[in-house]
Length: 409
Image (cartoon, rainbow, N blue to C red):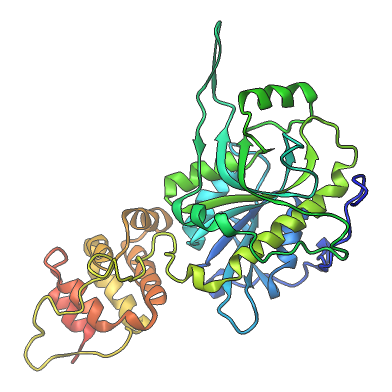
């Protein structure tokens, strides 16, 4: 067993702040959407995640988000997950906190899920020791309370992750090995049934820890960002989860918490990368706001019919293959107020259409960005024929535009 005063050495080469060289690339050159957004706070959390991206990283800047780092996670020779990595401020409700950053970033990056990665404190050393990793099977917001003469009435929420990630974490550590130089130094455990407390406090008090443990006897760990992430994810209806390593004890007994924070962050980042390595798992997961992927159970609801809803005019023939960017731009200028109805026929949900409203001022920009996202997300399935059918749908009723854009003249 390791000396609990100092963490064992890891077998990962960690980047340092001085290694983050190179100019930003233009946002227009970033491949969107991203598959996953990793959200961190402290530098050691951020650098731990960045060090595990395969093949290096790039960065870009967007005024409403600040710097965003991009890279991939996945085994060589396999389809890799496209990652966006960001930092937010500590806490949920603060300016630049997890609530605001998650909402803005999800709208811009359109990931399949958001993962909060980093370190946290154990509220029960019998359940989680230094270096262990806790995965949020449930998140409890402990701050909202009602105080009466009879005691405290809990007003917070206690919620699991959304369905896909809730199912996935049941086996999240299968095959995972903690990245230690000497595996005998520490037995790093993964708590897949972890109950996280999340609120506005950084707790380092035996009295306060005992109070929280009495109120929430099943709690394992405590942190400050999950509350905001949950609020944003719930509003946006997107998958979310918290994966954090134990760097200290909330009762204030840790003497070298700083030295464990880097270690705990590396363990959490490593487990996150392990979870995302299996690309087959996420192939059918939809990006935020995008068309739902076609599955056997969804073939009648998530994509438009491939049969023409209105006959093509005589001597006209629908073009083959995916539409060109120029045709989509021309369509965006012609479709005007009908762009929302078109978007629904192409499979976009209400939340994503609302996001296009917020993110763009002109009608043509709303339509063009939506059409380009549809083309990119559908790949070879996003054809002129599908677009023609959607434009000719009775709720869109733009057959003339459909024939001009989608048919050979």
